[in-house]
Structures are given as structure tokens and as C-alpha cells.
Image 1 (spheres, rainbow, N blue to C red):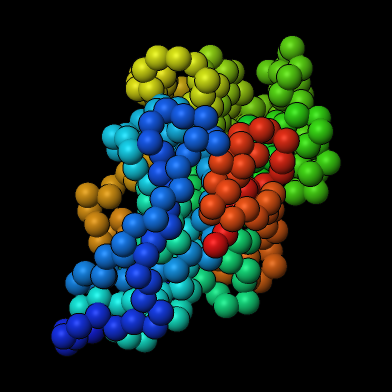
Image 2: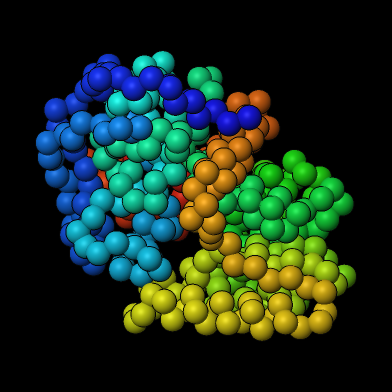
Length: 360
């Protein structure tokens, strides 16, 4: 069941508000800059339009996508300057025309792609997914884009079942740690790559850790699944994707969802992705029963209603698992929005487990 509030049949004559802001503070990427040069600006607030709500920020994440945007390397980012921020948790403080006043004061999760790094964010009411009140906002935030991504890759693409053996690259990361937990809940055995300093954290999640720096990584991973893996989740891309495909069992599924290995490589942001697409298409043409997919959370968004329903359904299931205590959140740090540079620097350092979260 979707948690998005139904629109009223009547149309209100004016926007309803709880604590409507007069100004908005937001973090702006002015161009390709170092983290400390991300600008914090204040502008006049704009009232909510028809079928819109204004959310007061409670938590927004710092994800790999924003790290790529800072470098001008995210595949379809908007032109500079813009406000990044892939997702957020916030409370409704203003409801526009056509929106029921019952949403005021309630807390929702929203996937935005950009714009979430702000004290107040205006979104379409149809994009809201309610957050259980017993869940902490920062902890819920760690499972918005990460939770949707992991759930859809695991259940909609790879269709992992009890008894499967899966490989998760970057098992200590935001999406990786969520994948591990959801796969274990589904009854799968999980092997996860991570640096040795994060191995205990990976074990605590229920996976067997393998050091991704070992020179014979493919052989080391094959030892844990001699018959191959039923599913491999790879955010690294680059040449390592070839080994990920070779590690598949007959009829196994490779899900690629990033090109982290090219994060600091100069040049076109599109070239690594296009090369990856070409490889996946070639592998899918082979008559060996293996599947190879590239996951894009925005695939299908042109069918707005179906796309929104799927996102909300999947996120609601993830948040329910969190509320029940079956998913363990990992908040690496809570840093004020006004100190966004410090937050980005920390998120990119590779020294933390979990997600860096921006708070008011």
C-alpha cells in the first residue's frame, strides 16, 4: 500500500501552512569545485504551487551521485550552478492548492535527484512516502535512495531467493551494506568485498568479507562460490566488471549500478557508462543463460504514475523493515547543512562506514 496521501477532489483557494518559511538556505554547486568551495546561499522562499508541498529538512544524504556531480561527472546532471541532493526526509510545512491539509506536520521521504540540500524543498505531493514516526530521520535517510536501489536490484532485477549465493562489491558502503542486509533477510548467503579495516563491519551485517585489494581477487572470490554466484552486484565498473561477469553461475545475474573506478578519471563522464552499456549488451546476446543489467533508479519515469507507485511501494517495504528492527542503519555522521563542505569531504574520504547525513 502506498503511503502517499490522496489528493482532495476539492481545490483549496490558497496554500495551507504550518510554519511557512520566508527564506531558504541551500548548498549550491557553482561549478567543478573542491568540497570546501560548495557555496551556502540564502534566497527568498517561493510558495508551494498546485499539488505541491514544502518540506522542512530533517535529513538529506551525501551519496556517490553528488560526489560525481561535484566533479561534473554524473551522467545527466544539470548545468552549473545548481543545488544537489538526491533524497531527503522532511516535514510538510506548506500545502499548495489541491493538497489536503492533513499532510501538514507529517514526515515524508522523497527522492529528488537534485535539490535536496536545502532547508526547505518543494516537491510534488505524489512523490511523498510517509516515514514511520518511531524511526529517526537520519536513520531513515540512509535507506531512501540506498534502500530503493538495493531493493529493486535484489528483487526486481536479480530476483534473489533463499538458498542463493550472492556477491556484493563494496559491502561496507551505503548501497552495499543495504544489499547485504536485504539479501540475508531473503535467505541468501552473501560474500562482500571491502578493505580489511571494514571486514568486521561486513561480518556484523552477515556477510563473508574479502579484501578487494588482494592481487588474485577473482580467485579469492571463486573460493567462496566454486559453482559461481547466483547474483553479483557491481558498482565499480571499469575492467573489473569482466571478472564480475565471469564469476556468475550458469543462469546467474550481474547487476551493474555505477562506475566508481572512474570517479577521479579526467575526461568525458559519458564514455565509461557507454562502454559499460556496450559490454552488457554484448553479454546479453550470448547464449549462455547469464543475465547482465545496468540499474538506473530513474528508468521508467516517463510512465509517471507507475514509476511513482513502484518507488513508493518498494521504499515503504524497506522503511517497514527498518521500523521492525530488521534493517540496521549506519549513520556515519550528522553534519549541519551549513557545513556541507565538511560533510562531502568526509563522505569522500573512504574512512567511514555508513552514510554521511546533512541535518538542519
